[in-house]
Image 1 (cartoon, rainbow, N blue to C red):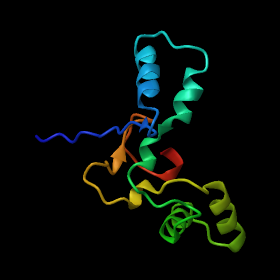
Image 2 (image 1 turned 90 degrees about the vertical axis):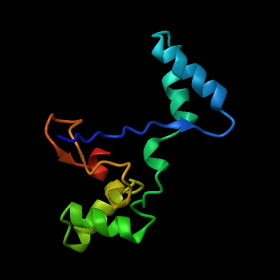
Image 3 (image 1 turned 120 degrees about the horizontal axis):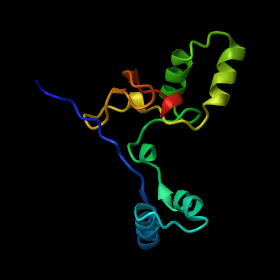
Image 4 (image 1 turned 120 degrees about the vertical axis):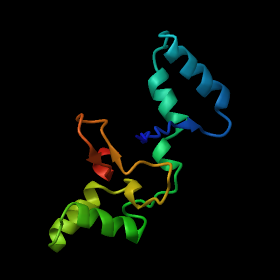
Amino acid sequence: MPMGLDLNVEGRAKPGHEAEWREILSRSFSNKPKKGDEERYAEISIPAWAQVNAPRVGYDPAADAWIIGAQKAETPDEIAAVLQKFHGHYALPLVKSDGLPKYTSQHSGTMKRRSAANS
């Protein structure tokens, strides 16, 4: 029986920060992090979800329409609240790629459809 494997894309270093990024990662893997490593790592990393060219809520009409539907917002007030709450979220389900799984079991032990809320 074939088995599907989830691809867990990790972040990567911002240009010009590759050596520092690898150094922080190395300390983390060897359980010897320094104070401030976690914050600095976040500052010099490009998150995985930002690397797949996914449309973003508040920037792309397709992402806006998707999140409005996913959150079942109907009234103008509900729509405005959803767009404000999810502003900047990447709409990963709109990305057409064999490399991104449509479902994940990461959060609850059951198969869950990926969404902006749990990305």
